[in-house]
Length: 581
Image (cartoon, rainbow, N blue to C red; front, side, top):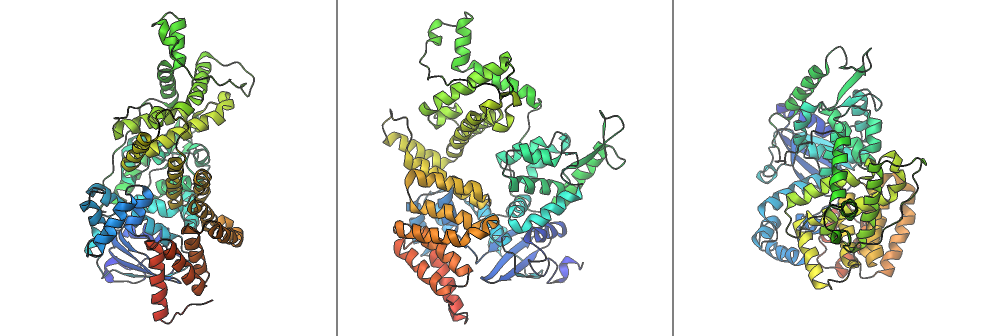
């Protein structure tokens, strides 16, 4: 391959059909390329800027989304702030700077939002299966592209989730011997996980690989959506974090293969990662540490602590003569009835106590607000909220349920979902403020929750899952939002998840008809027409797309994506591409 600095225009490949974007990013990172990659496809041109191998800036035509729209969907800003920023943009301000100026976000949120936007744009490009590539090393990235570079490994991981990346993922897994080869992350390499900018659930999943096992077992029990779990494993394999092991003659002694100690192999892995990341500008990430104790001991400690602070523990203490009798007489929620263990064998004391704890939590759920679910005060800091969630996840995650207590699986999932919902809201400053404001507006005695608020939370969750290409889970979240609100935009988003899902291509036409019906039944909703317009445009029906996007702007004159799509159609007409029926 030609040197990077010689201006070679094909150094990152010639087309997406032969070189998916995941492969492009891997090559760019290994060779530390700097320059501009142009991707020409049926809908226009996209541009990616690289600096020392990191994609530091993007310009996309397909599914363009402004920064403000992304922040609005994430719940970081509200509509009045969005509208004010648009007014300031008309005066020549950048939207992010305008949002900081009016106090809607701070500089840290702006940088994080810009990184998320760049990663989101990379994912959109990664979904393309066709497009010509041209790399020009003589074009340095513009100043705006070098300001807030996203984490290189986070970007790659998100791109590996996109459907066209599946062959790359498979090849990376095969390089370490396949999914049934024993692998692990050596413990002294755990600090290197800080390079990866992992979400909390991804980090928890990666920690499972600190114990020796196969990737098949990891995928089954890691708690991530399958496509995310495969992408994470593939990236760890690429960076040398996963060390393969063979079984020596003494099956109690493991040795790295081939013919070297696991420590030596792990050292090589660490050097490989350091070499890969050397010289690449990185977004700062928080360093996390895994507890030293093993899973069984940690779980036993958590169970004992949870029981001690619960009504079950207080009742046990009272019966044993500890504490005041009045404590046992405190109001308690109705107790759910225990189910029969699946194997018919009697439970030991610890298992019975945990069963009682689960049943108590289920009975209390209808009376708990989000703070109660995590067991934190209204004044809890973000660190306290995260710590409470991690402990609750270790205790109540469905995958952590012992086989003997499988009869509690449904209730365990319900508890974990309620805890996760509480964390998603309380860990986000904007959502937390909105939640507290809604609690002040409604009567304190109301215990059944606020349907509009719950619908909004479900829709935010759907947007986040859709960004990660987890189409099935996103559709479920939007369905839940629609059931709560009967909002046509939520129903349209649920249907769009079906259209965007590559595994459901045969349902596209039927889903399009459902979108048309949704637009007719919900004339106040803009998303049905917008999604129909995007679909018509992708199928070459430009006149139909033009009319649909205009209908979106009639419903919502400030719909940025529809306005952008209309401008692109106008450009196409001027270039002679003319609308097609």
